[in-house]
Amino acid sequence: MSEILLQIKNIRKWFNSQEKELMVIDGVSFDVREGEFISILGPSGCGKTTLLRIIAGLEKQDEGEILLRGKSITGPGQDRSMVFQDYALFPWRTVLGNVLFGLEIRKIPKVEALEKAKKFIKLVGLEGFENSYPHELSGGMRQRVAIARALVCEPEILLMDEPLSALDAQTRNVMQSELVRIWQETRKTIIYVTHNIEEAVYLADRIAVLSRRPAKLLDLVEVELERPRNRFSKEFIELRARIFNLIQG
Ligand SMILES: Nc1ncnc2c1ncn2[C@@H]1O[C@H](COP(=O)(O)OP(=O)(O)OP(=O)(O)O)[C@@H](O)[C@H]1O
Ligand SMILES: [Mg+2]
Image 1 (tube, rainbow, N blue to C red):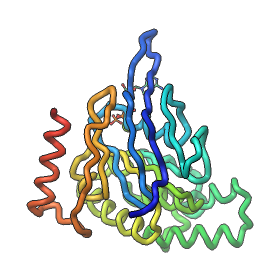
Image 2: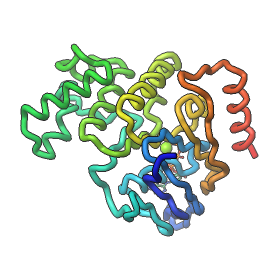
Image 3: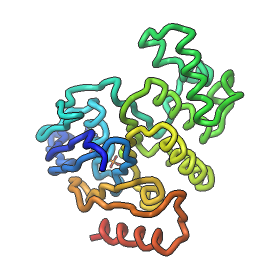
Image 4: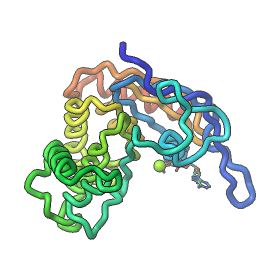
């Protein structure tokens, strides 16, 4: 059994909206193991992005704490990289320029930075597109750039917020298996937010299933299906149904 990397302990979060207190997260706790692919699954608006932003250190919880290797998270850090739903690429930079960005900020020497950027562009399957601009790429390719850009800084944890939801169903399936490949090659810990049950069952080792807002942890489901997973197998479909019923309550 791998080590515990991240401990999410009794997180509570309220927002002030129109002078009303809105409770968004209601006491969520679970651990994330080193190297695992864990998905945070829950209905739209339940507080998934908020929880991921708290893990990223971009948002502050009101109660509870998150420990990374035993140390409390108080802000963003190089140990965590985030991939957003809308890619958030720089349109005026090429694929290579986008992937190089984080390395430039960290003042990594040019030759080393170029070598790293090219390595990760290759890993995500974009060799040959180094000089293309985002508007010249398909949605799936843009998300590959976003993944390369997050990985190039070699974080311990990759935080992904519905990164494939803007894609058509077929491209999304291709990208899901690509993501499993990339995860297996890099052995990163991935925390993957989605509201799509099939996606979570396809990708994750474990699924933290959240309730409607305010988010509570309904269950931590182990997905014991071998990879590559077959979306049409009996076990896969049964697990989907079980989680669907769990969320429906
Ligand atoms: N900065 C904010 N100020 C006030 N309310 C907020 C803020 N951010 C989020 N909320 C509210 O918190 C709730 C949860 O939002 P959040 O974005 O975390 O949900 P989500 O589960 O990611 O939803 P989706 O699946 O639609 O992306 C929503 O009701 C939202 O309106
Ligand atoms: Mg969200």
